[in-house]
Length: 459
Image 1 (cartoon, rainbow, N blue to C red):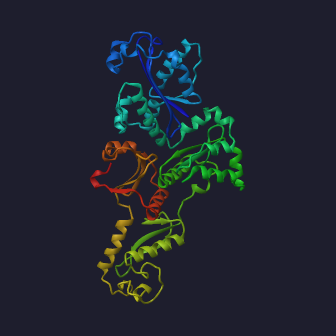
Image 2 (cartoon, rainbow, N blue to C red):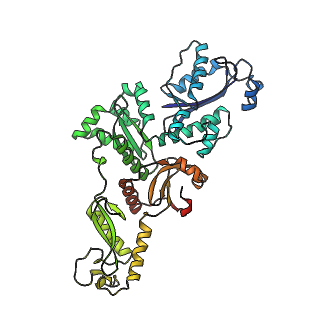
Image 3 (cartoon, helix red, strand yellow):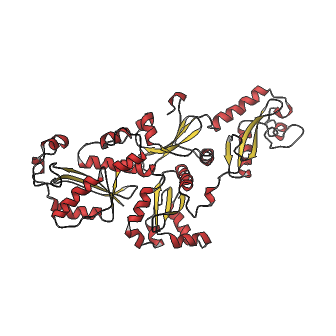
C-alpha cells in the first residue's frame, strides 16, 4: 500500500517551514482507496514568493485547522504504507518535522517519483512535476496546489509501476512491509486478490519473485494454485509469503507481460514458460509453376514465419480455414495429397490451380491478399483494446512488423502525438514468443480497434 502525497509550505529557513496545504491519496497500486486534503494554518507568515507561486494567502488559512488537529487523520491514512512523493525527501522531512514538534516519532519508508522517473524515463529534458507529466500526457490541474500535484503524482506513479518490468518497486515494497511477512496465510492472500485480468507475482519473504502467472480472474487462479496437491504447487504454498499483482484490462497485455517478465526475472517455478511458446509455423514459397503456396513447418529460426502455432493440429485447422476463406487450393497448401485435382476442385470451390488451370496471377493475388491481411511483418499499427479502468485504453505498438511494447492512455491526443506515445509505451523485447502471442490472439479474438499508421509516422 502506498500513501502518495504533496505538501505546500510557507517557505523560509530550513526546518522552520510550516505546512499550508496537504493532500494524501492512499493507493493500492491499482486504485485510490482513501484520500485526505486540507488547508493548514501554519501559525507563521508565508513567504511572498510562495504566495505568488501557490496562490495560498494568510487570509485563506485564518480559519483552517492547525497541524495538530489533522495529525491523527494523517497517521490513519498513511499507516502500513510506503510514502510516495515527487521529491519524497522534502515532503518526508516536512512531515517528520511537524510530528517532532508534537513529540510523535513519524518514520516511514519512502519512494521518490523523481528518482524513479530518472531511471524509467531516462531521456526526459526535465523532471519537474509540471514538465514531466506534460511530456507524458498526464493531465495536471491546480499546479502548485497540493491536491492537483498529488493527483498527478498518482497517475505518474501508476505509469512508473507499469514501466517497471524488472519489478524492483514491488520487490522493495514486499521486503519492507512487515505486515505481509507476518501474515503469509494463503487464505489472507486469496482474500486480498482481485477478480480482474492481470499478471500476478508470488514472493518469498525477502521480496524475491518465485513465480509469475497471468489470469482473466487472478483470485480464481490463486485458489487453484493453493488447493492443488501436485509437487510444484506444494512447494509454492510452502515458500510464498505475499502475492502482488498488476491489472492489465485485457488478456493480450497479460500474456505479453507474463512472457516478457518471466524471461527477465527467471522465477524458479516458471521453468516451462522459459521455453518457446510455439512449435509450428506457416511459411510461403513459390512452387515450380509460379504459384505461391502456404506450408506448415516445424518452427525454426532460419525462416520467416507468416504466423506461428502452439501445435500441429492448431496449424492444420487454421490453414484449412485460410484456404477456404481465400478460395485457395488444398493441394498447393499441402492439405490434400493427390496426383490430380484437389477435393475442393471436385466440388467447384477451387478454380484449378492444382491442375494449372487457374491463371497464376489471379491465384497469387488472393494469396497476397491473405498475407497482407494476416501478417504484420511490414505493418505499422496500433492495437487498441480495453484498459484497466472504464475510461482507459491499452495500446500495443507495431513498427515495421516489430513489436515495440505496450502502454495505457486516457486521452486520444496521447496516442496521436508521437512524442507522447513513444514515452508512454513500455519498451518490450521483440522476440518470437511476443509475435506468436499477438498473432494468435488476433486470430482468435476481436480487439476494440486497429489503427494502421502511415510509414512516415514511424516513431
